[in-house]
Length: 385
Image (cartoon, rainbow, N blue to C red; front, side):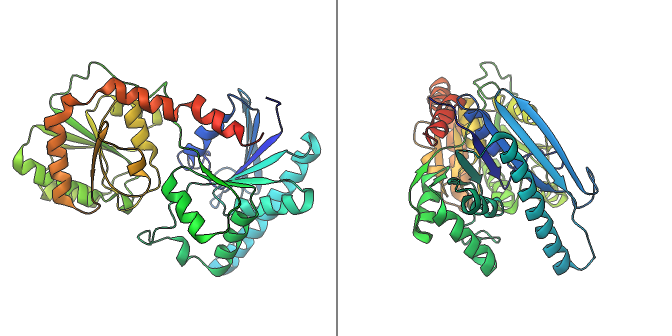
């Protein structure tokens, strides 16, 4: 395959200010870099001047992946509406300057690939108009579900119109699950679309033969955002404990005091373990050592946590929302209706009873074949032919 000059403009991406935001986009980039050299240009707002008091650029170049992270601090007046306008103006100004510099140095890219249409998609529209560069969009945001309090339909008119313009001007739109693809097709006149799943790191997530757990171990990994329904999960665990108590549940993520308090009120202090936020490598260690992943989200797109657990050979108990039914079947887990705490408790109990009937190695092999760096990288590379 002929190597092409490909430029990614993500709206979310890891940085020194937040190493987790858009980490799944970075893994997509690393997968593509197996087949195609790639430049990622990402602008991140440094509102508190932790990295810069104006504009600062950091560049890394590893294994065909060049990451240009630009930090900018906008001028602040203390008046929020004015500050928002000043921030957007500086974002656009700095971004255009960096794009012009990059194109002058390396030539115009064959394709621009936007990850999450707003705000980076606005720059893709500008590049298409100024340089004639076609662009692709990948949507990762679960914004098209009305249960999401920050959903697309509550955004301002300008946001929605620009998003529509980005989607409908793109040569191709990809999503990480079929559910999200159908949502977009129902809202926008999209030229072409396809699903390219999230990717797993097989070097971190793989079956662990000897676990040495003192009892059956559930694990939950997430941001613990309200959409993850931690209260519902804890209530499900409370109901499970009324039937059998020979289990523990490790909850990985930035928990809040009220969550611990609720666990205590439900009599779960001795069985629920809160790790707090962990580095990615430690998350993998915890997942590999567990017996089952449990998710009880109110709404979702396609959680990386689930495919990572599958890659580690874990069966999954999850709510039946978003793209999750595309990941879970009778061979690798159990699905329950969102919000049905009784069904969640029953499914977790069933999992404890049936766990030996799951073929952990087969679960891991199927996940690796579908979500590996090589598989996803090849699909991404094919976009630019």
